[in-house]
Image (cartoon, rainbow, N blue to C red; front, top):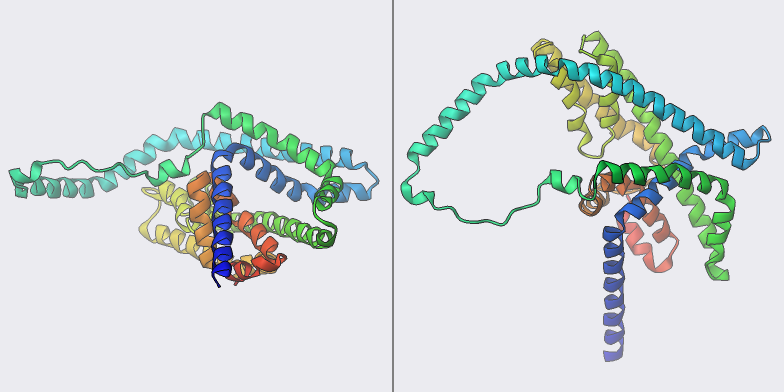
Length: 347
């Protein structure tokens, strides 16, 4: 009995040590791992294009190069168009800010009166300041590890090259990875890698399709309501709605920001209702249809994953939290000792 308890304690000690090492490696290896994961996601996104080009008898290396160049050209075009619209919007910011300031002025005056009242009520004994520990804000957490613009550009420049090599050596990399496992585990490893690949592909393509659909509907609705820069604001709001949990709030910010002082109160209410309705449609209808069969993670596990990876990697962690958790669940599903954890993560 004592031997069994000692073995159990030893097992849990090794497990906690392993988890601690993984967390430490994830925290200090953020730049390397983030570049690697983004390259993997990009390679899975472009994989169908490469396969389509291979059907017309193009070599895989050439097909990967063409697909990468097409993607870079698309990103460049979207960036130029977005930059131009952003500059036009920036030129109009003083006009919007003045109108917003005029609308908020009565509330600001009321707040100043309340503050003065509080100063009068406060007694001299209450003026002692108690030092408190500075708490890290959410903005500091989300920008954790961001570094300078040069660091970000340098790290991002590796993503296309790494994704290209992943596409070119896809079959070799998968076979070589399977060969790392003992013979009796290779079939399980092969199946697991295949399921992870399909999950990542569904996640990327599904989010892209949902984002485009919500953006198109948003542009149409904002255009009918005469929201300023509706084509740019609708596109931005549609994709911001995809951010887990925070999307419903982030998606409201652009149309409300440009709509204050330009739209009637009733139109602003319609904008808010439409943003909420589109977000709920995506969450309850589109996501289950496009991603439900591949990504079966319960809401509690998703929330914990977002909190954990957001704390470890900041904004990058929020983007990668769900695909990483989905991949971990698939691995747990195929490891006998980890199946209870997979059941906990699952729906």
